[in-house]
Amino acid sequence: MLALLASGTSRSSSSIKLAESESAAQNSNMSWGTEIWDQNDNIAIHTNRGIDALDKYANFLRDRVAIETEYAGKLRRLVKNYQPKKKEEEDNEYTSMQAFRNLLKEVGDLAGQREVVSESLQLQVIQAVTLLSKTLREERKKCLSDGAMLQQNLTTQLSSLDRAKRNYEKAYRDSEKAVDSYKRADMDLNLSRAEVERYKNVMTAKIQQSDDAKNEYANQLQKTNNLQQQHFSMLLPAVLNRLQELDEKRTRGIREFIIGAAEVESSVAPIIARCMEGIVKAGESINEKEDSFKVIERYQSGFTPPRDIPFEDLSKLDPDTVQESHYSNSISNHLTIKGTMGANKLKKRVGIFNIFGSTKEDFSDLPPNQRRKKLQAKITELQQKIAQETNARDGLMKMKIVYEANSSLGNPMTVEGQLNESEHKLEKLKLDLKKYQGYLDKASQAQVATSSPQANRNQLQNGHRTSRHSNGSADDHHEDGDDQPDDAGSLSRSGSEDNVAQIQNGHNNNNNGSSASPESGLGTSHTSLPGSGQGSANENAIGEDTYYETEVETLNPLGTCRALYPFEASSEGSIPMNEGEELQVIEIDQGDGWTRVRRANNSNGWDEGFVPTSYIECTLYA
Image: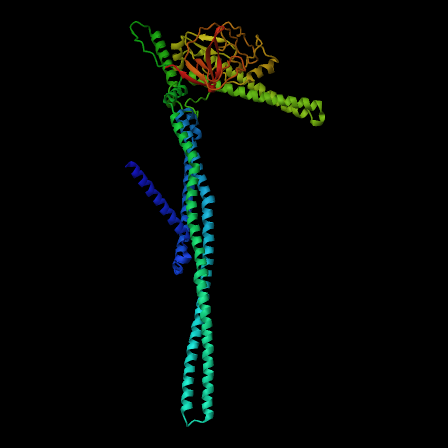
């Protein structure tokens, strides 16, 4: 039974396909010239409406292009209006603001894709539609003109036939009358023979005229029939078939244009999808905990809340002691208020891009943390300027040497003035660097307030905090746990400090012969294991105090990290790592771009050193 049903279904489907193929073949054989040969006016109206529909589609595309262009322009204007302002650049460190900037970038890319759609529709579709419409109108006009000419020829021939027929009818009637007149004259005995002969001659002439008109009518009738047959079987169908081809070309063009417009839209769909993925990725990159930590790092003053106010029994204290106690409390409260957000009520904020502004050269009016950060930033800026000026001076010296060796290239004295000016600039920059490093040393040594929350966390984990110094030594602060994330020994400094020492001394004074540049991990600091022998004093021209190496206890790990990229340790104090390698984090990035890590070593237990923060992915312990 199922087999019979299946066979019946297959036969019905094959019958349907056969009928469709026959219908298609029949439709392909049908033409306007044979099927609607007598609908010339309707065909003209239909083709005109078809071309009008094509023009309507072209206008639709133009309006859509205008909308796409306007949409893209408004998107770009929206992105421009919401770009972070200069005064908002300080907020760009937060993940939410970074995500918003990435969102704006993706929306800008979306606007670019809408512009691509607009331009593609304009160049690939609208121009083709306009050209096709113009061509079809010209061809239709020519076809209608040819059809009108054929119809005019046929009408002229029909007029000639009608005229010949009327002439024949008139000549025939005249010949009949002439025959009747001759017969009456011949039977009339009263007429002379001459008059009868005249009637006979008139009859003969009229008969001849009738025969000539008859022949002309027959000739015109034959011509008309031939022309009419040719007109309706060949000439007019050819014109109508041309109009049919023209209309089919228009219909086929609309199909291709609609598909082409869809393909233009589809071509940018993958890019738009990637933009959407980028927006989603930007949203997923927002980390509320990281932003909260950055708020702490940004606004942390370094002060601690005031301690409990002790009870003062005035009956047991002498007046001098009471006054001194009140005075100390007022000083303490004043310092605490200066380091908090309430400082804005006491003093107008000077800094435009930072909540902690300062009008003093040594930033002594700022809270401890902010003061050290400002001093470290100033030191880094000066070191960069020294490095640039040193490179410029070295270039001038090389130029002077070349000029002295070959005077044809230039006069050495022309470089002398520039060299002197460069030396003066270097000297001034070195003095400023020495001054600000002194400020930083004093700020680090004079701090009495409790350390920042970051240092408190390190105290809980490590029991102490060690700060890095620019002379390559390590210094434990067991008493106050002072956190110095931006000390003068920051690894973010360039090699300009080493250049300064070489400029003034002519050599490197590091006793162990290794580089004491900031890239080298600042001597032995925490970058070297205890007992490694690297910790000699580096007496450079900056005039830094001499520190000595101290033994430090092993730090507890703060978390783990994975190497995203391979890193070759090209300077002392850093350690190499391979891509994908797992390491222990023992000191997080203090703003200098370096993180201190540790890994197990089969030979001596542990390897410690610094690696670039951007090369690793950290996972800190809760």
